[in-house]
Image (tube, rainbow, N blue to C red):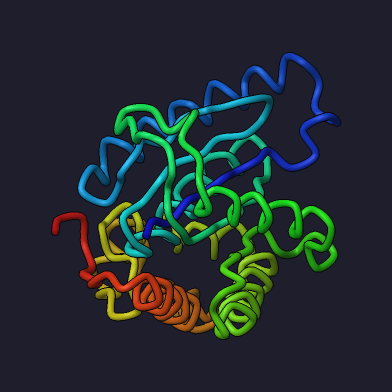
Length: 230
């Protein structure tokens, strides 16, 4: 069992050619960064595929949302939003660990279904992530929990999104991050950081994301371990 991700630039056809090329370049750089940072999580490296899509194959749900948030926050710096379809299943083709394009099987079929469902209904533009594994009874619960987190993030101000970027930068994508360390990373006074944290609900966001990762990994039958090393 594997976890497949297919991503897509949202409303790509509305972006002019120059800006689209700029987006592809930044996205490609972001994917290379992900491949370098999470080698022990990745089965087949993330790569651009056709049109405005990219894909990658993971061993489990571990670090899934950290990876998606890293890519999303990077693209948001140039005003580009993304969709992510996530699927669980097997792979029926040979796996090239350095290039995920051309790999196929139920994991990617499920990710494709999730992406198409999201394009049809993205909760009025507030949801960018959908999971598909129809064989499991918890699929609906996982998707509703994802959607609630997406709604929270959609409502965040830039300074609150910076909190999320800060937790990623300091390697603390979890609800027990040390606020004094985050304040130092973000060059903020502890009191100002505490106010942002309490108003954003970021600890709730992160806690729910980690629980979804655990749920996804459990239904795959794999063990979960936080961090970047097995």
